Amino acid sequence: MSETTDGYAVFLYDQAIEVLGAAIKPLLEEGPGGLHIPCIEVDTSGAFVEMTLRSRPENAQDAEIEVMVPTGMVRMIASMRTSTAFGFAATHLEPGLTALPAVGPDAPAPEAPSTAMPHATRPSGANASAGDDRRGPPEG
Image 1 (tube, rainbow, N blue to C red):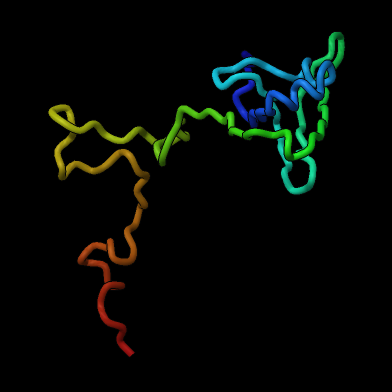
Image 2 (image 1 turned 120 degrees about the vertical axis):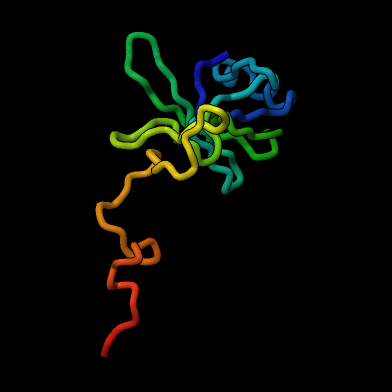
């Protein structure tokens, strides 16, 4: 199977593979879902499905190949995008940020200041301290 982890898998009908013959065979790869064409881009907006494939010819740089087949030959198009991260969890920490604190017996006390978010040096707005004169009504 290909090492490609991003893009699309275009599955053709068996009859389409048979009709296209030797021209399509080098582009097909075997995968868990069967024979498919791994693509980096697919355009289905016309009478033909336009597929952009990445190819590495021997003794040459990467090349892109565009293949167009009639839409009636395409059985299914599946996304091959893989990502280990899901949701809003940080996959890496930026300088100055720390991971969220642990929960359970090793967790810090509830009144301890959080180290997960950077703190402003001077509070403002609804989070301002009681001694801050900006919280009072305007004197006009």
